[in-house]
Length: 414
Image (cartoon, rainbow, N blue to C red; front, side, top):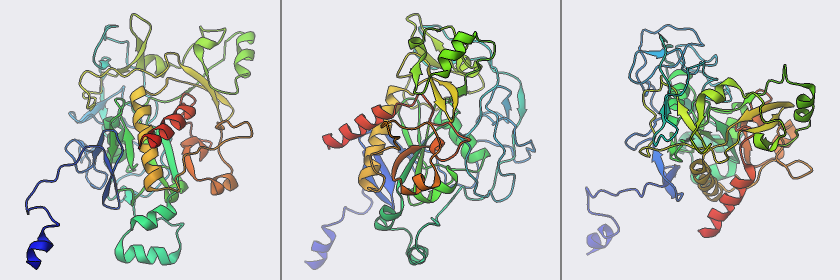
């Protein structure tokens, strides 16, 4: 009888216990988010625990640090692929602050071949191939969060992280754009080539990928890694607005921009956009922009069939970052939806990640780096650009107020 009672608390041995498909993992436990999540253990997941490349990288490759990333189906990458920022060479990959993205801006890749009424991600012609870089070796993450008391670290070393310990010592959620265009490309560059990591990625269609348990210290934000969880949101990024050659009255109007503004709201709408934005976006017959994937990207990895990625706002957004104007297309509605639910969930499971952003005296999210004192006193959600002057992500187009509204609304519905 005692044996019967004891076993009644457990399923029959060998019983499959399915996931709902919306859970994230924290210290080995699953927590619902209300939106689609692919874990590293799931089919088609991205596993940052693995030490070998996720995609095909030739072991004999010996390319320079700024070589192009390989495509999963070819031994070498086209010239149009994003170039890689300097990072670890072969051997154990040391921890280093991640760049503002997994990659930098792509080179020219020609003109769009997709019709204006396309119902699937458009592509551009592929270019010539370049040799792939040698993949890094060793782990792309760590387990030690160096700001915690020695007694906690001793306990972690003996028993591993508990959820209670993690709740006390993780208080930042850092937002990045990936400058790779898709989560698949982001993982190839970040993990396979640069030897770095991030806990989450959000694809163009709003699919969230978790690559590590949140107990792990991912390498995505330099010294803030100790306190933080990070997310790379698929977006080709923000680029400096070149005003050289513009009439003096145009430059004077743009110089007065202190907060992000839609290009269509300016008097001067014929301002030349950065080349990369023209290459990665096109418009349909109704003037609605959509993402155009480059020809070298043989596979998008998007989980939604025939998905067309459209910026949440039609017009490019122009705004200041560290005293310089940048242009960027907005993220998709699907990405905001997923990010809001992820942010709300993180606040519940790691409550020191507060539902708040850095604010200036006017209540606006400042487009600048926080001082050491400001950062030390802050707990909540912030951009990579708040950590360093060398980064602009998630960029001037990121709608902080929308994230605030939707994350709080998600919590009210629970």
